[in-house]
Length: 273
Image (cartoon, rainbow, N blue to C red; front, side, top):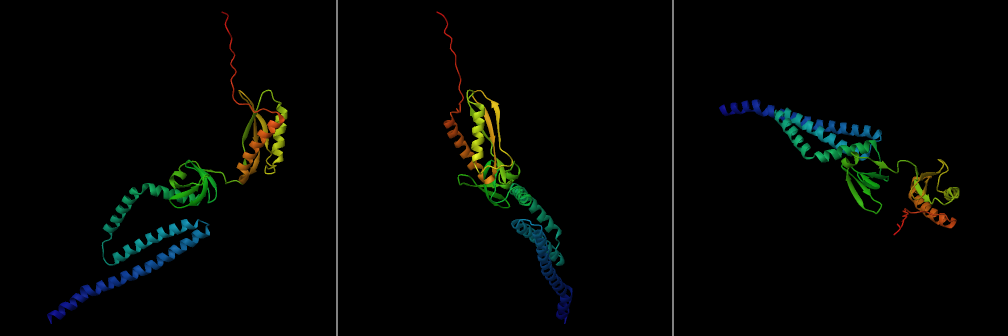
């Protein structure tokens, strides 16, 4: 009779409350997971409507889902009667330690988020950043991949990119080609300028607007220098620069216009014996 009484007391005092708490904790965990999933999906839809990068949306959704799951676990443990204060402190200390050990990675992550949000360049652009010039092939959360002109793949941490100057050569549809050509002091200045005008006018890749600039820029030590500045579509930049430079040399040779090189005249006076 005593044993039956003790068992019933045990059940009433411990077993039933524990069973209720466990059931409530399970309900809290299941419902919390469902609510967390709904919140993550809702936030993802809102971010997609703002035209944010898909990769960043997935990453932020993963972080939000992990944080909400952690909150649900803490609430469920609290429902079981577990003291979660020390657990939260432990998580905070672990987070601090991880943050300090991954300081460089977190900097790259923050820079990657900024690059994806503000888009100073996109995949396919020709960019100069962190001392590297090349076509952007991939932008990820922690680093970006460039392909250089000689077909090398360069992986650059996003922190190094965002902390420096970024030059995007593909950002605009048109570019100005800046070239300098020198002639001798004895050459016909007007003839040389007319020749440069004819060369520029004959190239169909050169835009009419803005108009090309051809002007004398400097009376140098060994030459009279012209600046030649035509505007072209960005894709034609290097082709126009190379072709115009070659054409100027060939045409100046045909027209008898010299392209001087730096030289020094030395005059020697012989003293009388």
